[in-house]
Image 1 (cartoon, rainbow, N blue to C red):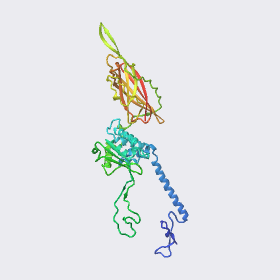
Image 2 (tube, rainbow, N blue to C red; image 1 turned 90 degrees about the vertical axis):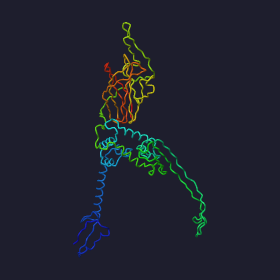
Image 3 (cartoon, one colour; image 1 turned 45 degrees about the vertical axis):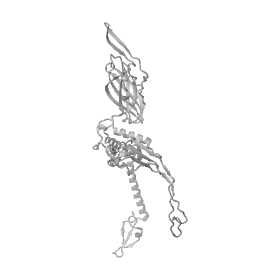
Length: 454
């Protein structure tokens, strides 16, 4: 009679061995995975099937992680990684779907919004502007994105230095002649003290020292720095790395990450941080209104009304076309000076493209006969419509009321100006349409201008 031990063991123990203490009884140790009555080949086959099952389970687990689209899967690999705290990394590991990733990113930026309750996140706009600059100026020789290099990281987190200097690579091929050492009596040695048959020739250096950069900040102490930031080039990869032994750069980076989180108590996205309501539906793109560009100051005119030989009123004839016209999209609507002695639009440049960090400034003229300088109260609403990918987008700004500003050089005419942030718009082509109503005359006007977000 024999007993079967199913525990794995070494090859040496697979032979029949005496069962210690029980005379006549033997123990057979089978290979891993075998069962009573199975051959060795069958046992190995069962083990192989188990291995395949483990691989399938691992593949299923990996597919759950791979459920994120590239847009979100690559997000923590971009420059945003420099802002992520340990808590952020732990939370990101639990993100499984695009919806969860979108919610994570929205909360990520809300926690870093210095002005809660306002439409614009100034910190995010500043960060994205720094990223754009770093990408253009700190790209590595091997093509690494500028904001992902160490100079780019420091620039994105600590901002622009006051002064920046650079010293190029240095090629070393200098020999330093040394005085010959006194002769030492040794078997087979040279008279100069070096190895046998090899005379001393002094100390020689050869190779290349990498380039260096130095950044000086205006107020380093406020950033946690103790001096200038130094970068040294790796002569193999040609990438720059900051010198960790100088100026407390690592500590300044850690402080910048912590300072950025100004709303640490947020655990879910508040209403004020949610994007404006956007409806996706088919729309008809309005035909752009032909614009008349004012290139010179029109001639002023007036009509005097008299009764009984006395002047009753002087009606100003508009210097420009009657009604609302000349809708311009510009960079900064505040640059217009309506009360200047020269044409207020002389130095204003129309724009057809904006970045997400920009404000989309707008201005239009309104002219009508008036007894005095035009201080017309107008109502206007804005519709931004366009196409993003395969989706049509409509964003409405509700009707608002404003007071038009008189133009000193254009009697009878005034202007209305303002701006909306471009941060809510994705890259694409858009139409900016305004509906203007003059409550005094009940006249309405539609103006439009096309632009794109890059």
